[in-house]
Image (tube, rainbow, N blue to C red; front, side, top):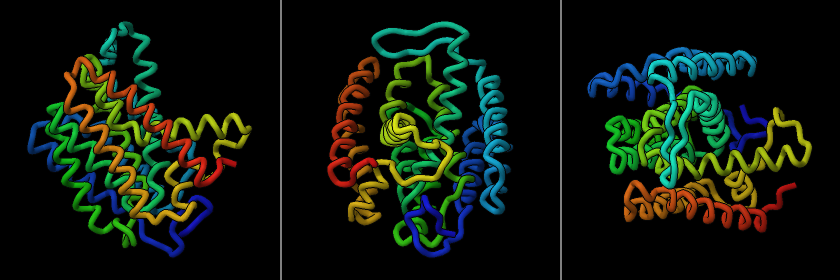
Length: 283
């Protein structure tokens, strides 16, 4: 049902993201990556339940935390992060990795607010991960999301729901951390920047305005562009156009120089933020 945060106006079925996750699961078994699915099972179950009958945010957060801890345990923890120009070492990095998983899980859900946006992002991220970072699951994620996008493009006949958005965010976070000790990690931060930049800056701005952070809102960059008169499709294509620029920059760089792409990407997104402010003020 439409609510204060919605960009749709008529009741639309949700939970369709389960099709994406089931397809990815089959693909993971086919390429011998089934181990990555274990931490996802509780998250998929609680997210699907929430799509059917909304539950407490605290319960969902507890499950996400348990899944994040399990994922870090199965990957042997994160004690080395390659940032291109320098590296970080130490067991304390697991704390940052844990927070990164939780934040990516939730922000991907926050950015699933207009038709085709989260699905298109998943296609892009999965494709680039396969092409540039040698992640076989990336192509499976891209293809599964493309199949779903057929039904989610404006006007969407079904939404992916939490079972799709939260699980995809968790998926991308764990895949990025699995390559934290390689130069590819900075590439992951670059290709995911469209979503994490919008969510993080918006959260900071709302905190600075002393707003209640748990309250539903429509202040993300993509939402304000839509409110300014841009159609769903125009916002999505604009975002994917930015992604294409980021992909081209990465393609011309050696992996050890991916940090340059990340800095350039943040600069571009900062310009987009200011552009969105002129279209629809952040009040």
